Amino acid sequence: MAKKKKQKIDTKSPALTEEQTAGTALSAQLHREFAEHPTKGLTPARLYQILEGAEKGDLKAQSELFEDMEEKDPQIGSDLAKRRQLAAELEWQIVPPDNASRAEKKAAEQAAEVFDGLEVEDLIIDMGAALGHGWANLEQTWARDGAMRFIEQPELRPHGWFRLHSENQNSITLRDNSQNGAELWPLGWVQHRHKAKPGYIARSGLCRMLAWPYLFQNYALGDLAQLLEIYGIPARVGTYPRNASDKEKLTLLRAVTSLGSNAAGIIPQGMEIDFKEAADGKSDMFKVMMDWCQQAKAKVVLGGTLTSGTGEGTNTNALGNVHERALDSLIRSDIRQYASTIKRDMLWPMAAMNFGIADLRRAPQFKLDMGETEDFAVLSESLPKFVEMGARIPMWWFHEKSGIPEAGENDEVLTLAPTVPTPTTPTTPSELPPQDAALRIALAALKGPSNSPQSALDDVLNAINPATQQGQAESLLKPIMDRIQAGDNYDAIQDDLSDLYPDLDVSGIEDMLTRLFFVVETWGRLNA
Image (cartoon, rainbow, N blue to C red):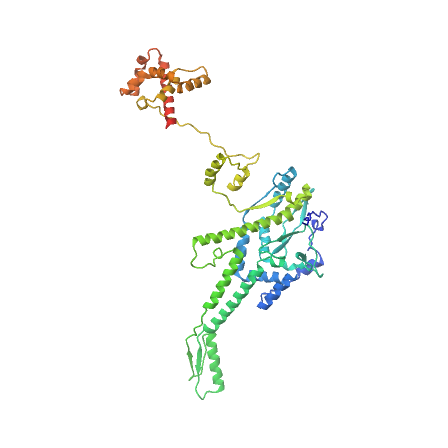
């Protein structure tokens, strides 16, 4: 297998100091040229000659043909504009490659700063001219900021300025007086090749697929206009006397003819004009042909008819969604091709000259975001389940699918707000269920303040399970439980606490009750 030739940056290219098409005899010659408008009087035989000539290297006629088609045909013009604009309006970003070095990160930062000063939407729209032609050449100029070199806004050059090399159908050159044209200067051009369809450059655009429906529709439209001209006006028949002279006959003929366009005329006395009913000419066949051409062009450019307004009257929402997905697929392909060209012809040269990044694969990456993210609710429900199952999901995948950018080192991040406990009203003894578990926990609270938080925790843990302390808990709480079962309320029990527990002082009794109510209520909430 042949080894792929490694690309290199030509740091001595004259494009770093001047434009190839500026201030030369070649430039003056190209600027004086005017389009020949091949669509004027276009016939099938002439169209075949234009397409065949493009395959032999003469791209000028085919390029001018498509520019005429885009101007004259509203269907082609609007559909192509829609497809270009859908890509141009997307948010862009420039990121370093994976596992980037310090130099690669700095190259990405410099490129992003440069692109902030460019009209990126205009750049994408200009590159979108390659949809129809199969290619687009934008000439770019270079500037310096100290030791740093950077590009300025590239400018789309007319397609008629270029031709194919006679010995290489995939090499585009600048037209001059030579047989093969002038080679394009390295670093001086953004050479975008758009694979709208497979094939050599002359056959890779949509122009050749659109040319025939365009021609057929023009014929159908011309025939329909002729039909309306012939059959749309009622026939006028003039009657003259037998002894009318040639001059009188000519006067009558002029009057009959004038009535067809001016609706006014005069005739000698004794002559008559009779209006017949217009002939019944059928236009259905012409309309069918025109509709087919419209739908064919929409399918070529947008991948379907419903996204162009040329669909049938029996369309369904499901079918509309299918056509919308087909268009999204085309846009995704477009933006990947735009990004590849920008990386090769714009980002990599800056990274190579300013930061020494010689490998194209390590150049900054240009991305257009279609905003296709997963549903947040679905991610929040499914990801924890997969993680619990042992799936090792990388963090970058989550950020890509959710569309949430990853925070930088100096970025503020969202955090959960602190939870403020809601005050609760202590539960009265009459509402407390006499559960053994609650009694066991209450035992720890009734022992009084502990020497330390750890000892208090030990008291609670020791009181929950051991069966040996069950009797002690019931004995301690029996006076209160008897009053509760008797139906006494909280206030009455509180008033009699000193009698129920004569060995405890007032503060100890209140502390005991507070602990009891808190622990029992908490245990009940946990069990609920």
